[in-house]
Length: 490
Ligand SMILES: Cc1cc2nc3c(=O)[nH]c(=O)nc-3n(C[C@H](O)[C@H](O)[C@H](O)COP(=O)(O)OP(=O)(O)OC[C@H]3O[C@@H](n4cnc5c(N)ncnc54)[C@H](O)[C@@H]3O)c2cc1C
Image 1 (cartoon, rainbow, N blue to C red):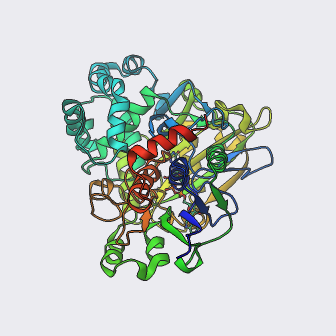
Image 2: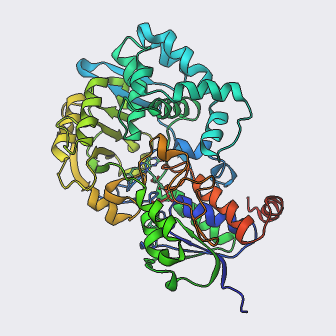
Image 3: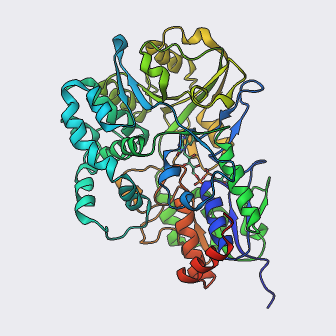
């Protein structure tokens, strides 16, 4: 029998696909990545979307997860040109009348700004920020018994709550919006169990490691990972949208960094009917409408602290935010949407020509919505930054359909490749202890449709690759570690 051309073929070059390929190549095995687009990176790309010289993050922009990810912690980021730029303030949440809730790196400083909520905030967030890495290891890792059960039970009991319930410990609007604005990234109802976990998890990373962007754009992440993969002997083929297994080179294992739906369509009969039925039951979430701007000057925020923040949650009070998100879930785009806004050029000067600035934002919309949200989103920004429209030089919009056309993993504009509620977070896209395995022993899935879900952390890829090595390539964890040490290109 002839030897397969590759030990593994990875379909899709998002951060998880590249992480899987790197882990396999580091174990001394041959690997090829096949990507549909003309550039690698999936959700980690940057382009001049508006005007020449203005660098925008096409998808992901803010990268706390890089710093807490076991995968990225083994990558020589600096040598590969992946440099983090930190804003003075990780994130803030403006309110009417020039008021603002500010999350500083320091828990104490943050608490001081919350008036009568100072003690409640410091008591809640102090221990979490201190133990952030350990908690994130648990959250980003495979399901396992915790090393420090008391710490995890303490976090779990708070995280399992709804953000609405957790918010009841705060008296002020500022105290309540600070965590609720972060929890809203999850796209879930504020009354839904587990939403507190998103708010606490994201706020905890903001304190512990900051909410940075990547100097020069998120595309530097994929450029760096591709360079590293090539150093390790891995290959990359671009502009090849895989539609069937027959197109793929002969390999011992196939690893899909695609949506679960696309895996089922490509692999077809190579997967059992039962597995494909389970994939059909996997639920997709809301879409996003995205805007990028080239600006003639910084955003004229009413609250001075907002000018120093990397990310801003624009939604008003918790009640307004809940109403806006509820309306999206009912299939109606809200008049005053929740706008997730980042101003990278304020802390990364490489993003725009001298004097110019960039901004990035998205709002949640019904999946596949065709409504142009530009006016409503800009109205919401104007509410907290009067005169914003006067500094716009150029804008670029991306509807949910554009987001999906750019990357087929984002079905209906769902940037997490599947709802991330309590039923679909820890085991996705199917219910099994190791959801990276499919019904076919040589076919794996490694995209954010698997745990730990959306975000640029590469951990879905790392977990899948470890299984590929052990089960399809006969490389034990110990052998992989030895090979990795001997091949580590620091
Ligand atoms: C607008 C937006 C904003 C975001 N903001 C953030 C943020 O600020 N911070 C953060 O951490 N995360 C953010 N995310 C989420 C993050 O980008 C994703 O969770 C992450 O990129 C998922 O990585 P992945 O490798 O699973 O898949 P992806 O990055 O989606 O990559 C999948 C790749 O597979 C390719 N592919 C799919 N099907 C095929 C096929 N049939 N043949 C060949 N190739 C195929 C695609 O073209 C794509 O390149 C954002 C996403 C979007 C869209």
